[in-house]
Length: 290
Image (cartoon, rainbow, N blue to C red):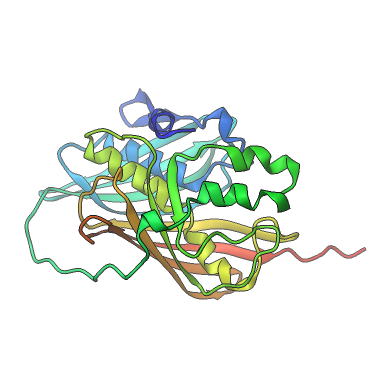
């Protein structure tokens, strides 16, 4: 799937004034819908009911695994239209049940005080191996049935600074990482869509940060992981066709959950364009008794 197909995939069909339908591409071949997709489509649904305002924050919960073989219905609640801020709630439904909900706030453009944390030092994106090339290099330890997953073209280019671990035999690493990423193909001039696709990409590696210290991966027998919630703040507009540095850390893991923070900086000028927070499930299933 390339970015052009991604933009088409995220497009919604309007069924009613506040009701929309979205789908998942057949070529994804996932057992459940990727969380970033439903975040992005929910934000897009909210934008369909908002005029002349830009999203500055969103907060959402993953309630049930989404089925990629059937459409998703997005219902938008127009919670408030104020003088400066607009609030929307979006519920994503499959088979009559909520699989996800999102609350988002939008603001009119406004000048004000400004400061930001400096972008941390990191190797230039040109000096970091592309994740796709790295996956192919590690393919010798990957079963044949994963060949399609390895070779599939991702809509987001990613370059992990310290390298992706071998999912077949992961080594423990510190609970932080830096990832260069950008949209693979041109998004266009719509600032809303740049936000939507940035939101899509923000879920791609964040949960893995809390998993890094424990020497496990999605291929470890008995290991279970899933995003539970996701929050995102958009600080400044950006062009996601440019390279951005995604700085991630996990301050804590406990109770079968891992907590993760992410900061997204634009490479060209070091601007902090967005911040993220996410808690995810991470547990080893208990073996059943004989």
